[in-house]
Length: 141
Image (cartoon, rainbow, N blue to C red; front, side):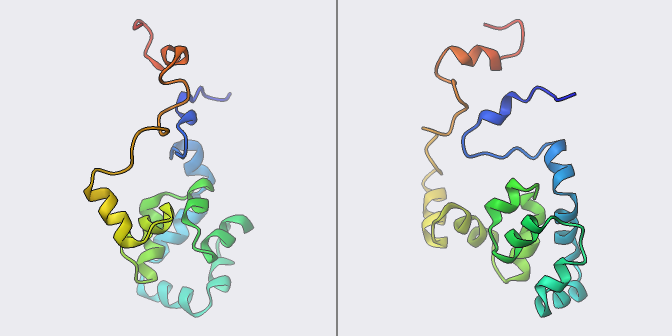
Protein backbone atom coordinates (compact mmCIF):
# COMPACT_ATOMS: atom_id res chain seq x y z
CA UNK A 1 0.00 0.00 0.00
CA UNK A 2 1.40 3.37 -1.01
CA UNK A 3 1.58 5.95 1.74
CA UNK A 4 0.11 9.40 1.30
CA UNK A 5 3.09 11.71 0.89
CA UNK A 6 1.84 15.30 0.75
CA UNK A 7 5.44 16.50 1.14
CA UNK A 8 6.42 15.29 -2.32
CA UNK A 9 5.25 18.53 -3.92
CA UNK A 10 7.98 20.77 -2.47
CA UNK A 11 9.69 22.12 -5.61
CA UNK A 12 13.35 21.19 -5.93
CA UNK A 13 13.32 19.02 -2.81
CA UNK A 14 13.91 15.30 -2.40
CA UNK A 15 12.69 14.08 0.97
CA UNK A 16 14.83 11.30 2.44
CA UNK A 17 12.10 9.02 3.70
CA UNK A 18 11.92 5.25 4.14
CA UNK A 19 11.41 4.68 0.41
CA UNK A 20 14.47 6.78 -0.49
CA UNK A 21 16.45 5.03 2.23
CA UNK A 22 15.67 1.63 0.71
CA UNK A 23 16.45 2.90 -2.80
CA UNK A 24 19.81 4.30 -1.74
CA UNK A 25 20.87 1.65 0.75
CA UNK A 26 23.85 0.31 -1.24
CA UNK A 27 24.86 3.78 -2.44
CA UNK A 28 24.91 5.03 1.15
CA UNK A 29 26.79 1.94 2.36
CA UNK A 30 29.41 2.56 -0.34
CA UNK A 31 29.75 6.13 0.94
CA UNK A 32 30.18 4.94 4.50
CA UNK A 33 32.94 2.58 3.38
CA UNK A 34 34.96 5.67 2.49
CA UNK A 35 35.44 6.34 6.19
CA UNK A 36 38.25 3.77 6.11
CA UNK A 37 41.60 4.86 4.68
CA UNK A 38 42.05 1.51 2.92
CA UNK A 39 38.69 1.87 1.16
CA UNK A 40 39.44 5.45 0.11
CA UNK A 41 42.76 4.32 -1.37
CA UNK A 42 41.09 1.50 -3.30
CA UNK A 43 38.37 3.83 -4.57
CA UNK A 44 40.88 6.45 -5.68
CA UNK A 45 43.03 3.82 -7.42
CA UNK A 46 40.17 2.46 -9.58
CA UNK A 47 36.82 4.08 -8.95
CA UNK A 48 34.84 1.94 -11.35
CA UNK A 49 36.25 -1.34 -10.04
CA UNK A 50 35.50 -0.30 -6.46
CA UNK A 51 31.95 0.77 -7.33
CA UNK A 52 31.37 -2.55 -9.10
CA UNK A 53 31.87 -4.29 -5.75
CA UNK A 54 28.64 -2.67 -4.54
CA UNK A 55 25.09 -3.71 -5.45
CA UNK A 56 24.29 -0.24 -6.72
CA UNK A 57 22.34 0.48 -9.89
CA UNK A 58 24.34 1.53 -12.94
CA UNK A 59 22.63 4.91 -12.71
CA UNK A 60 23.88 5.34 -9.12
CA UNK A 61 27.42 4.34 -10.14
CA UNK A 62 27.39 6.82 -13.04
CA UNK A 63 26.15 9.59 -10.74
CA UNK A 64 29.03 8.89 -8.33
CA UNK A 65 31.60 8.83 -11.14
CA UNK A 66 30.23 12.14 -12.48
CA UNK A 67 30.13 13.53 -8.91
CA UNK A 68 26.54 14.54 -9.67
CA UNK A 69 25.43 14.83 -6.07
CA UNK A 70 21.97 16.08 -6.97
CA UNK A 71 21.43 12.93 -9.04
CA UNK A 72 22.82 10.79 -6.20
CA UNK A 73 20.22 12.33 -3.88
CA UNK A 74 17.45 11.65 -6.39
CA UNK A 75 18.64 8.02 -6.50
CA UNK A 76 18.42 7.57 -2.74
CA UNK A 77 21.64 9.11 -1.51
CA UNK A 78 21.64 10.92 1.81
CA UNK A 79 23.71 14.10 1.84
CA UNK A 80 25.41 13.15 5.10
CA UNK A 81 26.62 9.90 3.55
CA UNK A 82 27.45 11.57 0.22
CA UNK A 83 29.70 14.00 2.08
CA UNK A 84 32.15 11.10 2.41
CA UNK A 85 32.70 11.25 -1.37
CA UNK A 86 33.48 14.96 -1.14
CA UNK A 87 35.85 14.38 1.77
CA UNK A 88 37.60 11.65 -0.25
CA UNK A 89 38.03 14.20 -3.03
CA UNK A 90 39.37 16.77 -0.57
CA UNK A 91 36.29 18.99 -0.73
CA UNK A 92 34.62 20.80 2.14
CA UNK A 93 30.87 20.48 2.66
CA UNK A 94 30.58 24.12 1.57
CA UNK A 95 32.33 23.33 -1.72
CA UNK A 96 30.02 20.37 -2.27
CA UNK A 97 26.90 22.42 -1.53
CA UNK A 98 28.09 25.12 -3.91
CA UNK A 99 28.51 22.56 -6.68
CA UNK A 100 24.96 21.32 -6.05
CA UNK A 101 23.51 24.80 -6.48
CA UNK A 102 25.52 25.83 -9.51
CA UNK A 103 27.42 28.41 -7.48
CA UNK A 104 31.07 28.75 -6.67
CA UNK A 105 32.11 28.13 -3.10
CA UNK A 106 32.40 31.89 -2.53
CA UNK A 107 29.00 32.62 -4.09
CA UNK A 108 27.39 29.87 -2.02
CA UNK A 109 29.01 31.14 1.19
CA UNK A 110 27.94 34.71 0.47
CA UNK A 111 24.38 33.59 -0.28
CA UNK A 112 24.16 31.69 3.01
CA UNK A 113 25.66 34.57 5.00
CA UNK A 114 23.03 36.83 3.43
CA UNK A 115 20.25 34.57 4.70
CA UNK A 116 20.06 31.81 2.09
CA UNK A 117 17.77 31.45 -0.88
CA UNK A 118 14.46 33.22 -1.12
CA UNK A 119 11.44 31.10 -0.20
CA UNK A 120 9.65 32.44 -3.28
CA UNK A 121 9.14 29.54 -5.66
CA UNK A 122 10.33 27.05 -3.05
CA UNK A 123 7.09 26.41 -1.20
CA UNK A 124 4.90 23.40 -1.74
CA UNK A 125 2.49 23.47 -4.66
CA UNK A 126 -0.69 25.26 -3.71
CA UNK A 127 0.73 26.74 -0.51
CA UNK A 128 -0.73 30.14 -1.29
CA UNK A 129 -4.04 28.78 -2.59
CA UNK A 130 -6.92 26.45 -1.82
CA UNK A 131 -4.74 23.35 -1.95
CA UNK A 132 -3.04 24.47 1.26
CA UNK A 133 -5.86 23.12 3.41
CA UNK A 134 -5.08 19.55 2.35
CA UNK A 135 -1.63 19.87 3.94
CA UNK A 136 -2.89 20.92 7.33
CA UNK A 137 -3.63 18.42 10.09
CA UNK A 138 -7.28 17.43 10.34
CA UNK A 139 -9.34 19.60 12.62
CA UNK A 140 -7.71 22.80 11.40
CA UNK A 141 -8.97 25.11 8.72
